[in-house]
Amino acid sequence: MQGIKITGTGSYIPDRVVTNEDFTRFLDTSDEWIYTRTGIKSRFYNTDKMNFQMGAAAAENALKNAGITAKDIDLIILSCCTPDFFYPNTSCLIQGLIGADNAVCIDINTACTGFITALDMARRYLCTGDHKRALVVASEFLTRQQDFTDRTSCFLFGDGAGAVVVEAADKPFYSVMGAKSDLLDFLYCKVEYKSNIPMEGFTDYEGYLKDKNFKTVQQNRYLQMDGKAVYRFAVDAMADSFARVCEKAGVNTGDIDLVIPHQANIRIINAALKSMDVPKERVYVNLEEHGNTSSACIPTILDEINKKGVLAEGKKMALVGFGGGLTYGSVYMEL
Image (tube, rainbow, N blue to C red; front, top):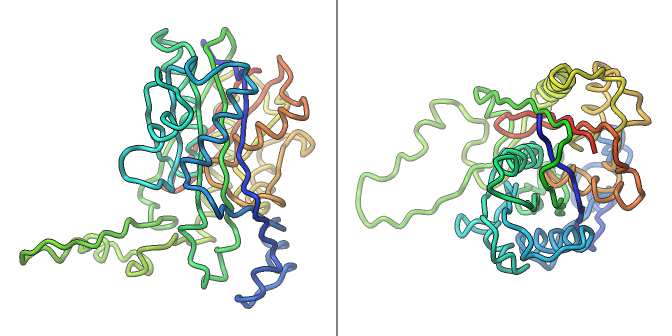
């Protein structure tokens, strides 16, 4: 199957570091309590940029790493579940900032699975021959969606953006994607509309949600999560999609040189690894310093390890993730 090659990586990491100790000032918690349950010590919070500006900064760094200009890009696919605007879409805003005048702009949202989804989409566009070079960006501003009175989840997330430049290549590329929408109330963040329609009879918009017994549906501004349910889904979904994509590619799980899982929680990652038959030294995790940055996790790791020379040609790599929806996906590719 025709695949793609990564020709450049980039990221944007905000300056503000927030440690577990910072949460003890307003929550009944401790560094030890958070770290032992999540594997997270710190995370980065955005304080001075819009989300699309973070995405644009990551994109520019990826272009620089690839040795090309924005005008060489003819397709931008952007993963984001924390946009600044309903419209224009975030990829259009990034296009304008970086000057990618020749690019088609597409936004997608499969939550934390988003970068995997976007990379797979980019391959499909590139392999038609209609597009020559794509910029795949994931940018997330998760601190805006957190309820900082919720001591069970607000410390999990950070902000940031990552990007890759990709081109079609005669290299193996396989993907497995899926969703379980009947589990959507395990992890969601509802859009908050405030209507000013000056007529009667427009008040029961949320009747469906009440019938479905959504948890804390009135708290519709912040992320809501059933941590135990998400854990059970994530462990099974990640291990299963990884096994399926390896089978599809015709490779043994033990032959994978590099596995990058979604950085949700170290307990989820470790539990999934037990079923994945991959040595821990081949699994890259930066959760301790960055927390969960949703779809930006994987591309920021790609940039981090690219700077260390880990993305060597010929290596076998798997990207594995899950997210709200609930969605899941795995990609196998050879560098």
